[in-house]
Length: 154
Image (cartoon, rainbow, N blue to C red; front, side, top):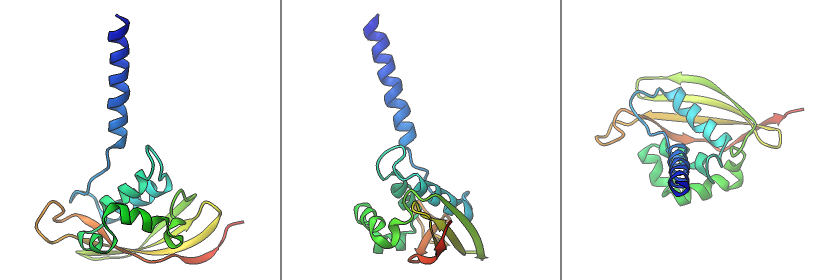
């Protein structure tokens, strides 16, 4: 009896952990601003539910042509820990400002407060994938600028 109960508890723990670890995948139904929200919220909580989960989630929405320059995932993780992008990891808050939205390209400006209270700006560009394949018609990030120092919070 105890072994059956114990086995059931272990199964529930393992199953719920795997559900938490599932990354959201790009679909044509996700609009450009929501893509940016998914990426920034994930980076804000980078190590939840596991180490670098936020970076991996962000990578899921990297445009295939962007992946050529930033991938594979291990190289992308290293890039995110470089000084220019590390300010995004575990940041305190962010604001997303839509700059321009066209049929196949979207431009946003991000104001982000880093964990140490410094405020940075980023240009965030998304493009709708036009090539045939699993990402066709999905909005994905084509480019993110290096951070621009805006000020420090008080």
